[in-house]
Image 1: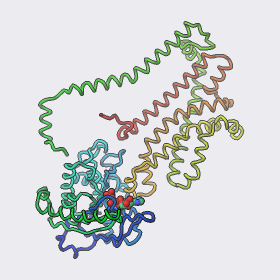
Image 2: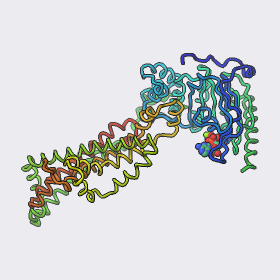
Image 3: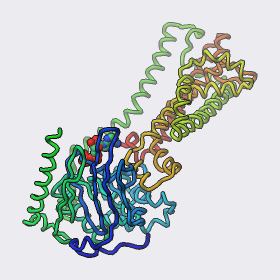
Image 4: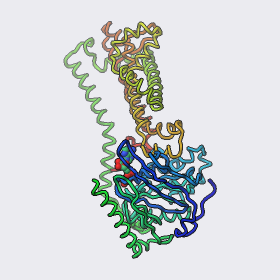
Length: 271
Length: 291
Ligand SMILES: Nc1ncnc2c1ncn2[C@@H]1O[C@H](COP(=O)(O)OP(=O)(O)OP(=O)(O)O)[C@@H](O)[C@H]1O
Ligand SMILES: [Mg+2]
């Protein structure tokens, strides 16, 4: 657990040379007999990647994350882990903060370590480190109900960070927040990632969010859920707020929107 | 996470400590309500007692039909030696039955969440136990169970345990599905999931069941005494009521009744206080909302 990954190594261009962290290989997922949540999904994730899964509701984004998290098993194909440590320390953030209301902030963050039998005292440095990273150390004794939506989400992120994960899965973590809070958390997320050097798979249905955050955008379509295409965002990290107003940003957003429109079109004649 | 500059806001607040008239009015209204919550029932209580005494005196009701409150109070004071002994007997049965109801109800609920098969097999019989009129099977219990205390406890237990069982069972299943996923991702054992997620999530439901069961345990104890007699043991309050009715000692009957009611109220208040202690930090039911 002590070993922490250094910041994302080479530029994305050298991607092919980097080792794999995890891959979905021709994964199908059916629910019941005829709900095809995912069809033939292939996805390679390398250390340091920030991959966004972008697509309309019902295209299987959450299903893909749940497959990676091991909560469900593929009907066909497989999820191949190349980094056992990443699997062991996996961090997950859901759309809702999903905190235990009866526990204080620091008890909530302690949970993943507690489940591994780490005592509170032994976990304290890691708990405080995670809370410092999300800027909530002051609130460690507060109960979730005393926090705003954005703060709750930060606690949820701190809980995902407390195992010092190499890979974090995030399922529309900021979808329920107002835009101002969301922008702020987007910036903070990139900052955290630069500091911790972890890999992120990020589900969103916002084109703008995916372009701002990720270096790879995987565009998906629904019925059946499938990958339509993948776009790269060449802008290097660290990305500042200025990127949001740059012409590059607008170009990337346009490209992603067009790809997404195609994805929706495909769906339109099915339904 | 606000747009406004906190430092500027703070200095503005310090410069002009605004006394918001609306806020003051709201606080006053709140205080009035707090006082009224105790004062009103108490006033109604006094009015009823007064009305009762007036009725008895004005209409010259004989005390063997309806004793006035003053006479009941006198009787209670005079017979307190006997009645307090009976009160202790009834209270003991009530508390023991409640303890057994907690153990049995919560224990079964936990067992049910651990095995769906056990739940499917046994739950219908729990419902049968619950809906069978206890008075109707009292003679059978009298025949099958030899020990007096066991009979009485068994009856009180049947009456009291179901709300705890059904509430706790619902509570154990009510935990947030994302939190359950989280437990699975972090590979929590069954025991860890129960301890860190299901039991705390069930606590408010359990306490709701306990509040109902507290009253039912007392009712169960009284019913048990009515149907099983004193069994040669120290007689309980229900037995005193029966005895007084045979001897036409109506004031004493009222005294015993009052002790039972006071006991019920005390149990309710104690359990409410316990709920508040355990929940006020986090649970909606125990929170005072600002708005
Ligand atoms: N447990 C399940 N049982 C049956 N069908 C399911 C289940 N989970 C997902 N599905 C179906 O699989 C498809 C993909 O669902 P998924 O939740 O992955 O979509 P999503 O892309 O995350 O959508 P959203 O943006 O609305 O969250 C949907 O049609 C959904 O109805
Ligand atoms: Mg989803």
